Image (cartoon, rainbow over all chains, first blue to last red):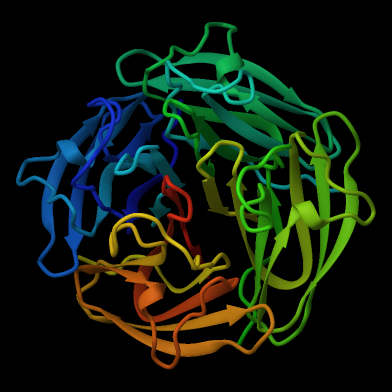
Length: 123
Length: 123
Length: 123
Length: 123
């Protein structure tokens, strides 16, 4: 199957709440970049994280094998540094082959979970 | 009315929770691909489902008649195989005529339902 | 200010729940097409509603004045016919000048309200 | 890093509820425009707010420094005038350098919070 999508994707919204309710890890508050690589070559993805009051963090390095999806939790990124909790951020993903990116957040700060999702912005 | 949309659509996010609260089928946790075929010819749609650690499943075959919409629950797909619950997946829809695809998830794992929706990525 | 957007917009997802909780009209379950007309001419919008098992309904006629927004509830459409409750539908909006359309649903079937929103698909 | 995005962005949906539950400011009902400026020059952004029954408000002036994100709450805009609560509105953002805009609403009118988010419409 051929590779579908774009090389560059932006997600302006980012916020990992400090608190959660419900069992971990499924109901832990998290931000996710769902990455789809439909092509025949592995995708090497660099992620840069932007803040309101300091220089960007990264690049973080992630690989998505050929014909695979990876639902990457920003909570799990820790090299070169973890994403701070309770802090506004944004992210930019740059791949070497076309991918498709969808952004999702599960927010369990209150008793019922809340979800958001949108296809990221392709450039 | 003329056919509107694209032939190829990608939805990187996919996850059917194992649990639900509330009456079935309306409040059963589900993932839906809402497909709109505004044109004068029936749309034959092939769906491929991607995973993080195995080869893609499919194609699943779905038809949307001329001037009709179909809100397809991934929960209902079972030929050639059902979509596993509690597992990250992504999907790719390939049609023979232009269609428009919107992705929606109802998540009823906790007492209050949560909803997400986004226009899928057209290619 | 110049007119921004497209003439044709599609929203494949549509569903007005039969039940609501909370005070009406604010917490009544509803589907909304938020229409923005940034231009200097009024926008005449025709809306067609598609179903899974019958011919489309409409056109419904809506006007959005110059430099105005209109958050149109599908619940309120009744000419030529109301939108049936508890039924899957999709919609197509066709304007005579460029507009921008965002789709939102408030779902108050359970105790806590749920919200979805996405920019519609421009053609 | 180069500037990514568009100069003009539209968000047809806008509504700041009058009521909230939960601790302020985190759980205060709010509408946010998440703005990402990946480029090497600061972004000067003009915001116009549209209503259903009066002329637009603005421009509001916002700056996003180079390589920064800013998650702007419409609740906080007050020059030239605050955004009225409980009122339908829409917004248009015009920047002097490319930016990316994502729209998010936290709605805490009922006991559990609800979230929506979508990439805004680029023009």
